[in-house]
Length: 168
Image (cartoon, rainbow, N blue to C red):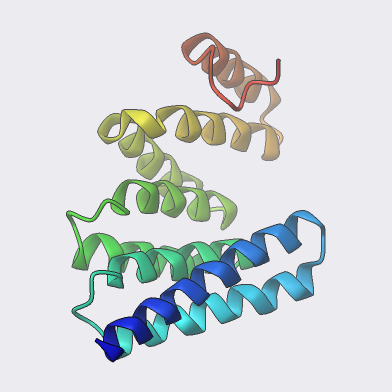
């Protein structure tokens, strides 16, 4: 019973550190945010190492991946999301992990692989299609491919009129 509480508490603390990191990042307190993301990675890694059969291991892998993503360590994030899909193919975190994998590839300027990944997300996980489509369209704007970006964003708005990415 004590071990169960210990790993739950450690994972709970990892999630709390991640949430705090996101909050700090939104406030442009990047060095403090990085410290929180590092703490989330450290605590999650301990859960994975000490309790590899626990029910929170896939959660912890996902949390490590999104923490690396938030820190801008995109190659590390991609590796964590690959590991999640490989080790826990039936995890409920795989769809969002695949989305973040695609976003990390985009941010790391691996556009071809990112597009393939995000197109697969759109096909396999319809609930994430608007986010994948929006980020692909926005990537054209970020790359200064304005005509293609404008066309892609217009198609996005037509296909997803109720998306939360649409500004009213």
